[in-house]
Image 1 (cartoon, rainbow, N blue to C red):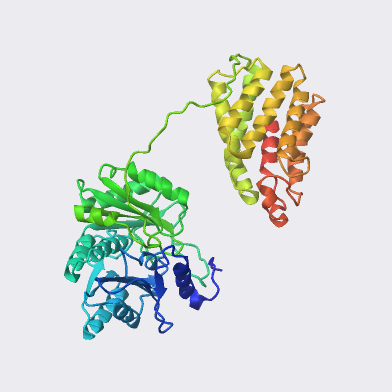
Image 2 (cartoon, one colour):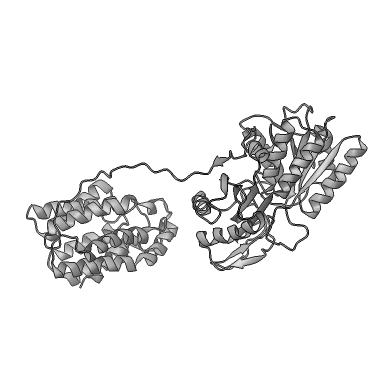
Length: 545
């Protein structure tokens, strides 16, 4: 089955258009009320006193093109079906509806269907006595020998520059020339690790192999020009930058549009933007646009970069205010500012000391947790958010480094436990770090009061339960830790190891989690899966020698 929210496949585009119009904060959009097969979004405030700017194409590239209709950009957007050019009649009706004596400019992406349908509509409009010009955007540089390069995300920059020229009251010929100059100044290239899926189409195993990327694939899912055997963000950006610089030159001043093709998380887009501004292009970039979804390909897991060679006219046009739903204001590139601040924390005053046996014990525990990282993450992915292994390993690495550097008070159990608690609160993420910090801190305080180590650890467990809210049987690490510590009261390490393992195994039979992320998972998904925290505790006890 496909993974799309929709009601009626035949009405998807119409439903989306309505959603765009009613959610526009400027309340300046409307749809032509004509043949239902004609889908044209127009400016509600348009009076035909200036050159009209019309663009469009197949749907599935949202927010293009309706998201850029408004004062300062497009006058109208003509929407076809998914990945299908709008009809000649649809384009013609759009031209007639918005074109006055000043004429109109069509901005068309370089695909055969778009060129033909917009071109024929332009010729028919001329028979109505209307002045119509057209520019074709072919900013894709992934196929350098192709005589008809595709129009991709750089098209939005043409919308912006042409829209500004029209808003300034320039003539049709001037607007056309400025738009053509923008087309000639833009280079774009996209990359993806997964192609897009279509509604009502069963998902199939993708053509892009795991761990690989396709460079230069089209915005309709067309195969790329080449592949890259890495998904490393730095390497990917470097590859795209290398291609862009060949086209723009090494000295040109640039604005770069960072475009999400629809399926990339905001976290990844932020990281990719960071890589861009640290790449070989960094000294040429004056402005950034995005990162944002501007010309998408449904849910394609990919992104594109569009670089425009700047001049004073383009800079002014890109900065001009618009009244559209989805244009991203231009940002002047600047280094990340940093504000000096002294870390506030209660530092342990314990002095490092040596104890060979304790040093070995700490090493065994931390090495065990580090080695378990991937396995615990995989287990947690089934019942939680997939980070238990990384969280425990992060804390373990910090303590292991202190151990290796001789900075732990190994001969002072109370101070050691409290220091571990202090460090885990700092370096471990989420609730796990706080809970483990409570456990070790409370235990250390009891040891300082001359309580036995096992009793102190049980006290720490009690404090963890008190603040964390979990109890034995709630499907957490407590199900392994509590029976292990209780068995350890008899000075029997073997019994403690067996109790921890039995406790972890028992969590696989618990149908309901009452604490942690697993508490939001239904019982069917929990069935037969051990709690990763309990597994981590069992592994720690098993690794003690």
